[in-house]
Amino acid sequence: MSQVSLSYHPVNKAFWKLKETENLDGLKESVNNKNYQIKKIKADKKPEKKSYNHNKYFLNSSGYNLDKGYLQYSNCNYWINELNYGIKDYWSVGAGILPLNRFIDLPHSYYLKTKLSSKFYKDRTKVDLTFFYIDSKFYDKEIRDTSYFALSGAITFGNTETNISFGFIRFFFDYVPNTFYTINAKFKLSPDFSFITENNLKLDYGFETMSLIGFSYSFRQASFDVGTLLPFNHNKTKFNGFYPFIGCKISGSVFKKD
Image 1 (cartoon, helix red, strand yellow):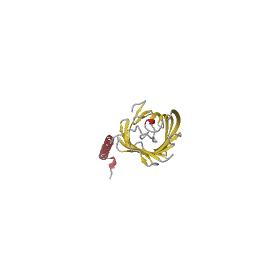
Image 2 (cartoon, helix red, strand yellow):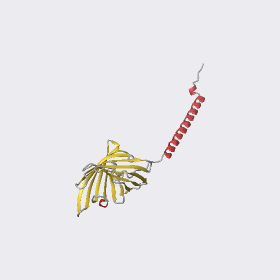
Image 3 (tube, one colour):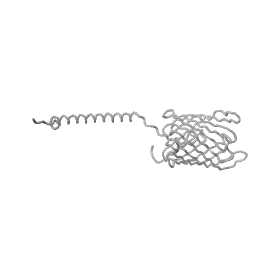
Image 4 (tube, helix red, strand yellow):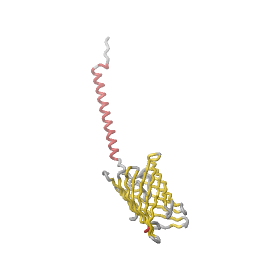
């Protein structure tokens, strides 16, 4: 009695061909559904805002540098003005003016600066060194000009939006306090608002602190700062009061459109 293999039977071949077609259509439908879900997730997810002014807190520097090709103007209480330019992502240069003699017993100063920064250990740990050349004019018994240098450095833990820094500022000049130690922090509260605190400790010739606490609002490529300055002389156990602080930082690319 002869036997017929079902695998070669025309009806059986047509049946398996039909099953393959159904599986292929189902696979296509599944892929299309997944692609739709991925596109929907991407559409619903808001893009992160680019950080432009992450190289500074209010006045003090962070371990992050200004991006290559970006020019930044910053102002503090209308009387400290500074320009910075990013030559490389790790190197920037700048210049500024500090007419401090109008407010405190320090000289009227112009300065040039250059800042170098680098990744340290991990991507979210940065270090920087900033060199200053300062030309000062003293207004005491007679007007006299003096030039000197300063060096600052910091190590920053965190990203450009939320981080904490530990650093120092050293003046190589006898007429001003020699060294300040700094603790600075920035905490992102919303896509546009950040809380910032700067704390400077002076240990030379006594122990004094100067803190700056406030908020920063980011709008496009600018940030607007408002806060209060809290100086305290621990030698005399004297709190010197509240001083309002306002400032701004504006950055933009020089050679390409953002």
